[in-house]
Every structure is written in C-alpha cells, then in structure tokens.
Amino acid sequence: MSEPRYKIVFDGELLPNMSLDTVKDNFARLFKLDPARVEPLFGRRAVVLKRDLSANDADKYLSVLERAGALVRKEQDLAASLTLAPTDEEKQEEAAAQPCETMRCPKCGHEQPKSGECSACGIIIEKYLARQAQQPQTGTNDGRVPAGSPSPYAPPQARVGEELPEFGELRPFTTDGRIGRLRYLAWSLVLAVAGAVLFAVAGIGMAIHVAVGSLLIAAASIALCVVAVMIGVQRLHDIGWSGWLLLLNLVPVVGSVFSLLMLLMPGSVGANRYGPPPPANSTAVKVLAALWLIPIAALLLALVFGGFAAITGMLPPV
Image (cartoon, rainbow, N blue to C red; front, side, top):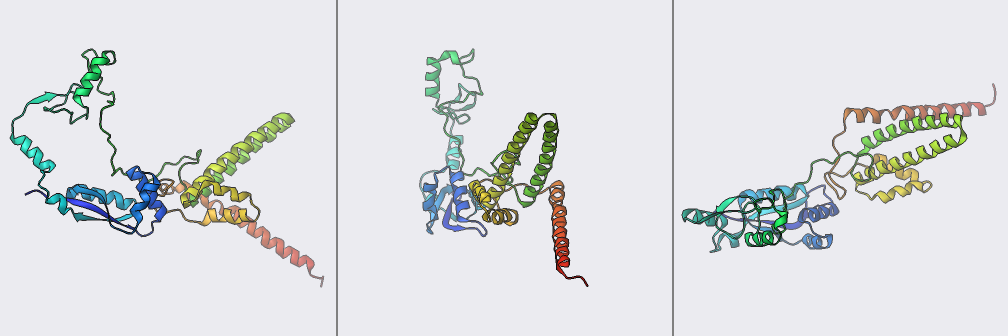
C-alpha cells in the first residue's frame, strides 16, 4: 500500500500582523509570478497551491508559505492517493527489482539505467550528442563539454519553496534595503560628524583661496545630501513606504511633521516588498542613537532659560 499523499490549500487568509500587500509581494517572489496573476489567490476561496506531496515535502511547503505570511493548511490528497498510476517510490522499487542496462552520461559521467535523459545533470542525451557533433571545437579533447559548462537542454531548476533570508544586508550607500529607527538616528549622527569635518576642511581651503574653498563646500554639500537621501529612503522602506515620500520634507510645515513620523513610526514586522527586516541593533548603534539626547536636552534647557529670562525682563522693577 502506498503512502498517503497531501496537498497544500490556501483560503486567502493571512497570518496575524501581516499586511495583504506584503503577502502578495511574497507570493509573487516565491512563485515567480506577476502581481496580477497572484491576485486571484486572495479571493477568499479555497485554492490548491500544490498537490501530490509526501508528508515531509508538504511540511516544507507549509513552513515556507507561513513565513511568507499566508495561513495555509495541509490536507490529504485523496485523488492522488486513490490513483491507479504508480507513485515515484513504486516506480523506483519496480525498477530496482528488474535488471536493466546501464549507461554513462556523456556530459557528467553519471552512471544510471539506460534512458534518454541524465538524472544527474538533466541533459537530453540525443540532443547533446547531436550538438557535440556539430560543434566539436567547443568541447574538451575527448569530445565532451567541460563539467562546469551549462547545458541549454537542462530543465529549469526553479523551486517554489525558495527560502527568504532572515535579515537584510546593511549598505548605507544605496537606496536598497531597510534600516530601523535607532540605526537611522545613529547613521544620521555619523553623517553630521562627517559633515562637520568636511566643512572644517572646506574652511581651511577657503583660507587658502576662495575658489578652492567654494569648490570644497559644494562637493561636501552634494555628498552629504546624497548620503542623507539614501539612509532616509531605507528608513521609509522599513516602514513599508515608497522612498519618493522623502520629497515631503521639502514642503513647509508638512516636512517637519513627516520628519517626526520617520523617527517615531516602527518598521514592518517581517519581510515586506522592500526586502527582509534589518539585523538587530548593535551596542554601537544604541550608544550613537542615545547621543542625540545631549543636543535635545541642551535645546530644551536653552528654551526654558530663554523663556524665563524673557518673562523676567518684562516684569517691572520692584
């Protein structure tokens, strides 16, 4: 009696704390489909994503799809279990019980039962030999293509269950990726210190010659603006927003509120359409972010004492 077979069923429901857009993007990436073809899967009706799976393979699909944010379930595939066609295991057992001729693959040297296709490298042997006969100059001395050469006749190796990385890479000089609130503060502080150093060098150049100083100031300003835009876009990606929203900082009043939102809004839980979450904050990141409390405290003290002095100056003398 053959082992039971299983299927993966999806009802369009999502796991808690997962947004619909994020799960759709994860499905499109996993199944390598256009977003328009993923849309029908979320119609609140049962859809079979994969059939005729062993228990082990079904559990693997469940794990991958749940990490993508989908609420899926495993059910026994009665249609596959009741079929009269032999399963892959039964075919292998039957083939092992019967003696058969063996052959060696002309490309990779794999020895297997005689067949028209190599089970190791996947080439169609007849087409491979015909291609070698037409282009013998591309092979090795014995007429075979080197083992590392890809074959145009190999079947595709794409897997639906390709795992997403747990954390994204940290790359400050790009608009790709995501960074959290603390890392945004830490990188901004480093950028501010670097800007102070660059403008100090530009001041020295200004003392040498006005043209040299002006050129250094322009170069430093452009470099600082570019890097500030890059880390700002990554912060927006972590929230799940488009990097183009960074232009709102140029709008009066709205820009101040939006900058505050960038500092306070938490990032998306898990992967979103801009990639996996950033790695955990290191001790250095936490220390640099905490250093922002010093200028904030100084500003608050200045406002308090300034207001007190203004009120005292307005009072009539006793």
